[in-house]
Image 1 (tube, rainbow, N blue to C red):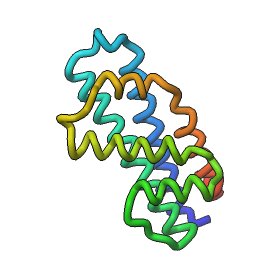
Image 2: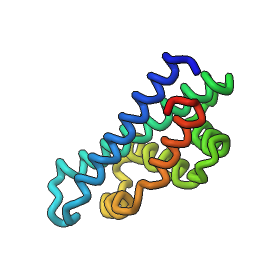
Image 3: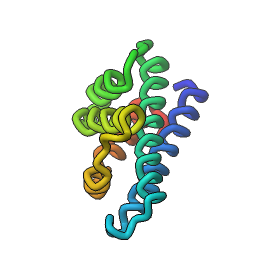
Length: 138
């Protein structure tokens, strides 16, 4: 494995894990007690998470498989299939949420976002570990 590629993948995985930790920290409080700033911070952490996942995916696809994908969803679904994490549905939904947050923020139901984050991020973390392992970076 190319050291530079591993370093880049590890950096993106670290960014994704930090975003997950921050989102979980925000949602450790009751929704009714969150400030507007915390709700916006939660949105931001989800955008950061998807950007890190997509960047990791694009680097992995180009470096390991010689493939360039045109969309985040396409890359993450194919990478999930290749590494065998079984998280394609979750990853695809995260991309859709990111797109909603970035492009159509006025339609976001923050309570639904909060409830979704309260669910386990285990699948995302499993995908990261399998992707790094697939690339022989761990």
